[in-house]
Image 1 (cartoon, rainbow, N blue to C red):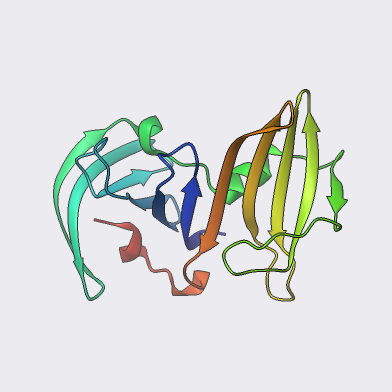
Image 2: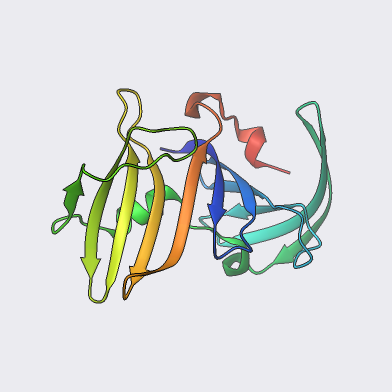
Length: 167
């Protein structure tokens, strides 16, 4: 998929949400307010690995940005669902339909469990007729949850336009 928009909640990112919009190699991350960043938005180019931070004001779907300060790409890049799926071969995966979970209002989800050494990865997918998307990744080590990332789609991919991912 070359265009999509979702909200991410990652327990490694100060337990805050970030809104991510992707159009081809352009990625916009609308940050949650925090003391760690003076920017409201970071715009990344996934081909050149360049990133710029901006302060943007949005009003009625119109965005006005100022700044454009170069920032470290790796400090702001957030793994996408596709990144996770491309890293995994799922050859040794087990589908666990006995486990139920509600994620972002979706109650029909299925877990695919992958063991990697002393870590267990739970990939939770939307199991509805029109779903199929990756909703959450949980990583356990020694039976303790060490990371959880949720992806909740905001728009139908065809509704995402290039200007949605640009300053």
